[in-house]
Image (tube, rainbow, N blue to C red; front, side, top):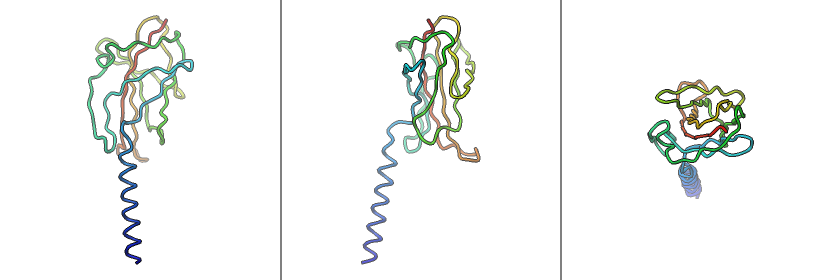
Length: 148
């Protein structure tokens, strides 16, 4: 009788672990807003648990045909993840011609450019172990804004 109960518990826990592990259909996607207006993001490269790794084109290539979100010059653009735990590190880069320039995050915000125009960005989030030695997962996204 005790063996049957133990076996039932093991089967239940194993089934639950499989269901929970398979529930993630996408890696975490950032929430990016400016003046409470959400800026759409496009999933880019990632390495995430049972989803494995995927490598996508970088930079402006993934944003062809995407409509830029209009923002005010020098407005605060907020970057966050609804996923818990929060990423260990978040980085934002602006794609300029053939190079990237870091867009410094301060308290989860970066500033939109002052000059009018269309600007392309990439964002990466990394989750590491507490000691920082091992990756628990990473994801990147791209988005486009238009300063008017």
